[in-house]
Image (cartoon, rainbow, N blue to C red; front, side):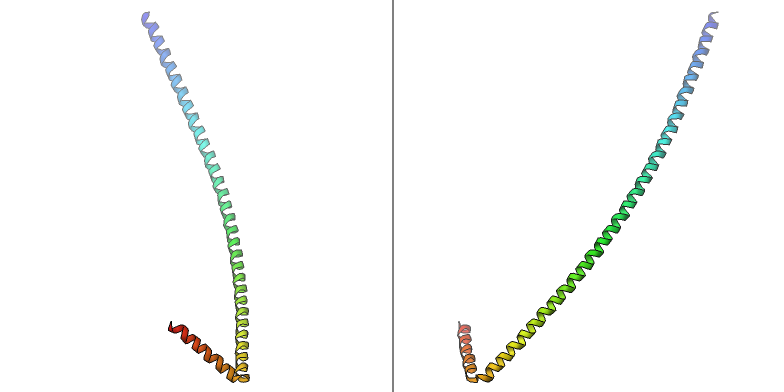
Length: 132
Protein backbone atom coordinates (compact mmCIF):
# COMPACT_ATOMS: atom_id res chain seq x y z
CA UNK A 1 0.00 0.00 0.00
CA UNK A 2 2.79 2.22 0.54
CA UNK A 3 3.55 2.08 -3.15
CA UNK A 4 0.04 3.12 -4.08
CA UNK A 5 0.07 6.13 -1.84
CA UNK A 6 3.31 7.52 -3.23
CA UNK A 7 2.41 6.80 -6.81
CA UNK A 8 -0.90 8.62 -6.45
CA UNK A 9 0.80 11.51 -4.82
CA UNK A 10 3.41 11.52 -7.59
CA UNK A 11 0.65 11.61 -10.21
CA UNK A 12 -1.08 14.45 -8.42
CA UNK A 13 2.19 16.34 -8.24
CA UNK A 14 2.85 15.80 -11.96
CA UNK A 15 -0.69 16.83 -12.84
CA UNK A 16 -0.36 19.92 -10.60
CA UNK A 17 2.92 20.83 -12.28
CA UNK A 18 1.38 20.31 -15.71
CA UNK A 19 -1.55 22.53 -14.75
CA UNK A 20 0.75 25.22 -13.41
CA UNK A 21 2.96 25.01 -16.52
CA UNK A 22 -0.14 25.33 -18.70
CA UNK A 23 -1.30 28.33 -16.64
CA UNK A 24 2.13 30.00 -17.05
CA UNK A 25 2.07 29.33 -20.80
CA UNK A 26 -1.43 30.82 -21.00
CA UNK A 27 -0.23 33.90 -19.12
CA UNK A 28 2.78 34.21 -21.43
CA UNK A 29 0.46 33.99 -24.45
CA UNK A 30 -1.80 36.69 -22.97
CA UNK A 31 1.23 38.89 -22.25
CA UNK A 32 2.46 38.45 -25.83
CA UNK A 33 -0.96 39.46 -27.15
CA UNK A 34 -1.07 42.50 -24.87
CA UNK A 35 2.46 43.51 -25.89
CA UNK A 36 1.52 43.14 -29.57
CA UNK A 37 -1.58 45.27 -28.94
CA UNK A 38 0.50 47.93 -27.19
CA UNK A 39 3.01 47.88 -30.04
CA UNK A 40 0.18 48.44 -32.55
CA UNK A 41 -1.16 51.32 -30.44
CA UNK A 42 2.29 52.88 -30.22
CA UNK A 43 2.79 52.48 -33.96
CA UNK A 44 -0.58 54.14 -34.63
CA UNK A 45 0.23 56.99 -32.25
CA UNK A 46 3.66 57.42 -33.83
CA UNK A 47 2.10 57.43 -37.28
CA UNK A 48 -0.47 60.04 -36.25
CA UNK A 49 2.25 62.09 -34.55
CA UNK A 50 4.42 61.93 -37.66
CA UNK A 51 1.45 63.02 -39.76
CA UNK A 52 0.86 65.98 -37.47
CA UNK A 53 4.53 66.89 -37.60
CA UNK A 54 4.45 66.72 -41.41
CA UNK A 55 1.40 69.02 -41.46
CA UNK A 56 3.08 71.49 -39.13
CA UNK A 57 6.28 71.37 -41.18
CA UNK A 58 4.33 72.05 -44.38
CA UNK A 59 2.52 74.96 -42.72
CA UNK A 60 5.82 76.38 -41.43
CA UNK A 61 7.38 75.98 -44.87
CA UNK A 62 4.46 77.80 -46.51
CA UNK A 63 4.64 80.56 -43.89
CA UNK A 64 8.38 80.95 -44.39
CA UNK A 65 7.93 81.00 -48.14
CA UNK A 66 5.30 83.74 -47.85
CA UNK A 67 7.52 85.71 -45.49
CA UNK A 68 10.49 85.35 -47.86
CA UNK A 69 8.42 86.53 -50.82
CA UNK A 70 7.15 89.47 -48.79
CA UNK A 71 10.67 90.36 -47.75
CA UNK A 72 11.89 90.06 -51.34
CA UNK A 73 9.08 92.30 -52.60
CA UNK A 74 9.79 94.85 -49.88
CA UNK A 75 13.53 94.81 -50.66
CA UNK A 76 12.83 95.29 -54.37
CA UNK A 77 10.49 98.19 -53.61
CA UNK A 78 13.05 99.80 -51.29
CA UNK A 79 15.76 99.30 -53.90
CA UNK A 80 13.62 100.97 -56.57
CA UNK A 81 12.94 103.88 -54.19
CA UNK A 82 16.67 104.25 -53.50
CA UNK A 83 17.45 104.26 -57.23
CA UNK A 84 14.79 106.92 -57.82
CA UNK A 85 16.16 109.03 -54.95
CA UNK A 86 19.70 108.64 -56.33
CA UNK A 87 18.56 109.72 -59.78
CA UNK A 88 16.85 112.78 -58.28
CA UNK A 89 20.02 113.72 -56.39
CA UNK A 90 22.14 113.22 -59.51
CA UNK A 91 19.77 115.36 -61.54
CA UNK A 92 19.92 118.12 -58.92
CA UNK A 93 23.74 117.97 -58.82
CA UNK A 94 23.92 118.17 -62.61
CA UNK A 95 21.60 121.16 -62.58
CA UNK A 96 23.71 122.92 -59.92
CA UNK A 97 26.90 122.14 -61.85
CA UNK A 98 25.41 123.62 -65.03
CA UNK A 99 24.22 126.72 -63.13
CA UNK A 100 27.66 127.17 -61.55
CA UNK A 101 29.30 126.86 -64.97
CA UNK A 102 26.94 129.48 -66.44
CA UNK A 103 27.57 131.85 -63.53
CA UNK A 104 31.34 131.41 -63.89
CA UNK A 105 31.20 132.09 -67.65
CA UNK A 106 28.98 135.12 -67.04
CA UNK A 107 31.39 136.46 -64.39
CA UNK A 108 34.35 135.99 -66.76
CA UNK A 109 32.51 137.82 -69.56
CA UNK A 110 31.36 140.68 -67.31
CA UNK A 111 34.62 141.14 -65.34
CA UNK A 112 37.53 139.72 -67.34
CA UNK A 113 40.31 141.60 -65.51
CA UNK A 114 38.96 140.81 -62.04
CA UNK A 115 38.70 137.16 -63.02
CA UNK A 116 42.29 137.20 -64.29
CA UNK A 117 43.46 138.80 -60.99
CA UNK A 118 41.60 136.25 -58.89
CA UNK A 119 43.04 133.39 -60.97
CA UNK A 120 46.58 134.80 -60.59
CA UNK A 121 46.16 135.21 -56.81
CA UNK A 122 44.84 131.67 -56.52
CA UNK A 123 47.82 130.40 -58.53
CA UNK A 124 50.34 132.21 -56.30
CA UNK A 125 48.60 130.94 -53.17
CA UNK A 126 48.55 127.40 -54.48
CA UNK A 127 52.21 127.57 -55.50
CA UNK A 128 53.16 128.86 -52.04
CA UNK A 129 51.31 126.05 -50.36
CA UNK A 130 52.84 123.40 -52.61
CA UNK A 131 56.43 124.60 -52.00
CA UNK A 132 56.22 123.84 -48.30
